[in-house]
Structures are given as structure tokens and as C-alpha cells.
Length: 95
Image 1 (cartoon, one colour):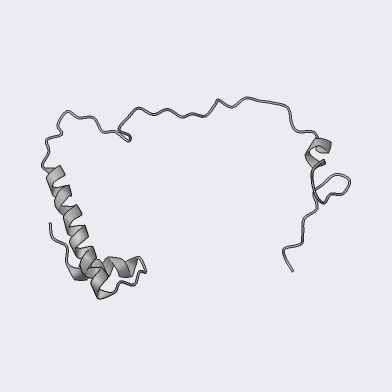
Image 2 (tube, helix red, strand yellow):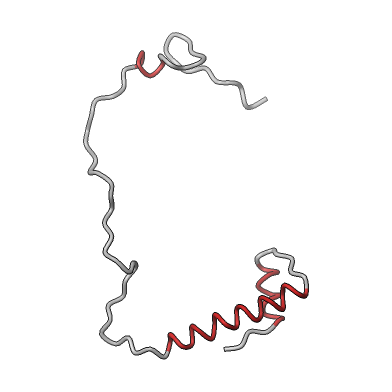
């Protein structure tokens, strides 16, 4: 499958990229090579091959949620640089 310079420039415009003529020519060559390889892959017989999201089996390494007690207010505020009796003080951000 061939890609034209005008197609590369159109995609660059949609992506809001400025490509100089030399870069556009290089992109035509590189994208053409990628598309040729994809055509090669499309010719491979994959009947009976299950679709996968990963090449290897992957599991989520996160632990299950467990209910725990809440953090005590004094412990939460003990290292705060600025605080009042029961809350954090932060700089004003809206004028």
C-alpha cells in the first residue's frame, strides 16, 4: 500500500504538526515501509488463533480492597506546614 505526500501532509495538518518538505518525504518513505509490512502481516493465516491483548499472560498486581480505619485528624495534620485547629491552610489561588 502506497501513501502519498499529500496524505502525509493532511495527517500532519490534522495533528497540527508542521513538516518541512524533507521531513514529509522521509515520512512518506517510513510510513510506506510500515504499511508494506502491515500488508505482509495481513497475508498471514490466523484462523483458529485467539485474539490477545498481551503476548504473555498478565495479571493485575494490585491487592484486593480492604476496609481499614481512617487516619486520625491529629496524625494527618502533624506534618502540615500550615494548619489551624482542624484543617490544612493553603495559599489562596483565586483572586
